[in-house]
Image 1: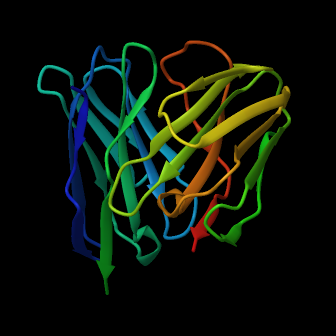
Image 2 (image 1 turned 135 degrees about the vertical axis):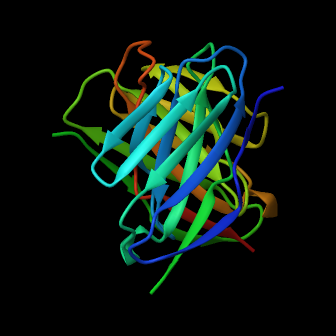
Length: 109
Length: 115
C-alpha cells in the first residue's frame, strides 16, 4: 500500500534549527512535496524534490533520498511565524499525491 | 496572476440537508481542479479531481458529488448530508499537464459542521 509517515508534533525554540522527517512508500515515484499550513488556513507550497539531494530556499531546505524513501524539511533561524503544520506528500506513478497527516511545529520563545 | 476563490468559508448544516460548495479559478485556462477533505489528525483525502469540463474522477465512494460546468468552476455537492461529512474542504488547482512538479494551489477552505 501507499503510505506517508511523519511525526505528529515537534517543539523548537525561536532562532534554532529544526528538521522534520518524512518516510514514504508510493506505487511509483514522481517527487516529494512539502507544504506549510497555518491553523485554519489552506496549505501553501514550500518545496519539491524529485532527485536525490538538498534543495535550498532561503531559511528552508528540503532533502530527498529515493533509495531510502526518506525526506526531511530543515528550517533554520526559526521565527514565531513558522509555527504551523508541515505536510509531506509523495507523488505516485499516476502523479496523484499521497499525503501525510502533517507535523505540527510549535515554536517557543 | 492566478487566484482561486472558494465559498462559503464556514457553514453549519443539519443532517439530511443539501450542500453546495463552489470554487473558481482566475488567470489560467484548462486547470486541473481538485476537491480535498481534511479531517483532524489525518492527511488530506482526495475526493474528486477534474482535467476538463464535465470530466470528473471520484476517488472515494460517498454521498458527495462534484461537477465542472465551466472550465474554471468546480462545485462540490450533496443531496443529504451525514454527520461524517463534517470537515475542512479544500479546493485546489494545478496547471494542465503531467509534469511531476504538479504544484497545487489551494483555496482558503470551507469548514463544514453537520449537526
